[in-house]
Image 1: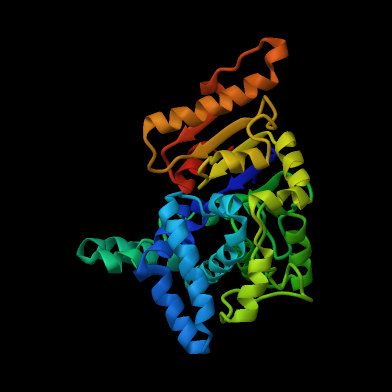
Image 2: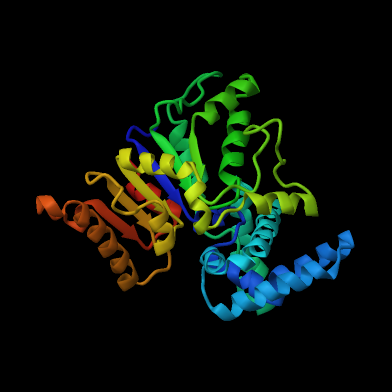
Length: 348
């Protein structure tokens, strides 16, 4: 059970424990032949598609690679003419990750298997063996949500607005996880009741979602782990947005309102890229008395300090007229931890 108004801001690292690539891994998979290219050529041959698409993607890959920018989203924002093919590449990679995604014990087993075999792999094999990194925070948070719910119809109540997610990811792993496990926990409850409960939970995709699941939109949905084909990729690519397209995104205002009202904000698997922070008017939009906590897995201390100073500067800019300065150690915790460890140590 979570009693405080809590908002989770999710970056690519939040989906890593379930088989999805981080932003850095996505770049590697696109730029190296043993990643995206090996899989995509098999896909092209299987569907007997024209080479024109391959040539377009090759051009995108080469420019993206030589630009040496870590964020594909920022790259597309700087190169609008290449954004269309970039969205297509993202759609393919997200669906490819979805098809191999795992949850619970299966994800943990995959992670342990990878850790056991990693030292004996050649680099080209290692590229496909670096997924499922990080602790299972979905499992931990889910059990906090259902804590104390006893009985065949004791569904969680999300109508109080105590819990919300703002995600910069395109994948649907969180939505699918919650539906799948609630459906199997409450087998005597009508599916319609579970769906109505879930629909009261705010999960806002700042840059879009590749496609809705059946419980989200029964009239226009894509099943989890679908067969990948051109119509699916084109549809998903159309659902991907870039930073420059956010002016027309109604979810932005809702996301900003959630952050204003939050008592505690957790940044999970988030890279704190300036362009993503700016989209939500972070950090200044967060209420001054809120507790802010975030992951910085694998970061150096100086990198963490820079992010903390950024938060402090944003808060103090908003409070300048009152000449009241906050102590960063009192409200801001940016830790070299994965998502699970951070929640276990700091989630009230």
